[in-house]
Length: 109
Image (cartoon, rainbow, N blue to C red; front, top):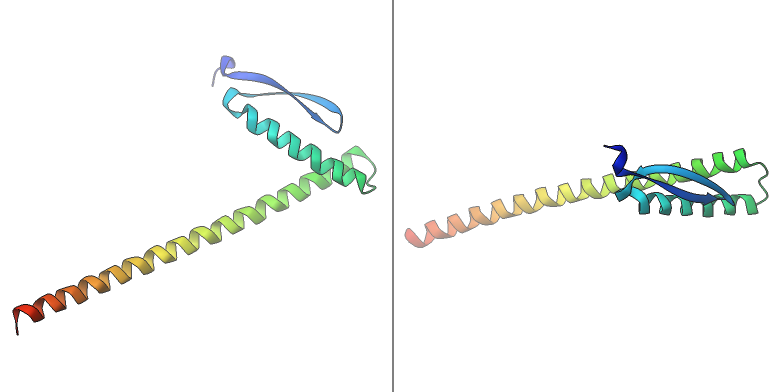
């Protein structure tokens, strides 16, 4: 990646500006992540949590937990899709075997 492909993005989190460098194609995703983090930190802060460091750690913990939950759900979905594919394949093989038996029966009355 070249320096030319990077751009500076300014995000606001809890009223503070942060300048970050990222590839141009990742700009919108980074801004969306910053908005999500800002919203989560504001929620935590409004709950009475004092101290920016504590708010940031709690927000990171909650977001990490959600990420792990989503990964787990995605893995379960992928596992289920794999099982369904295997069952469909087995059903297709059984139908082909039945077709072959029926075909033999027609030729050998």
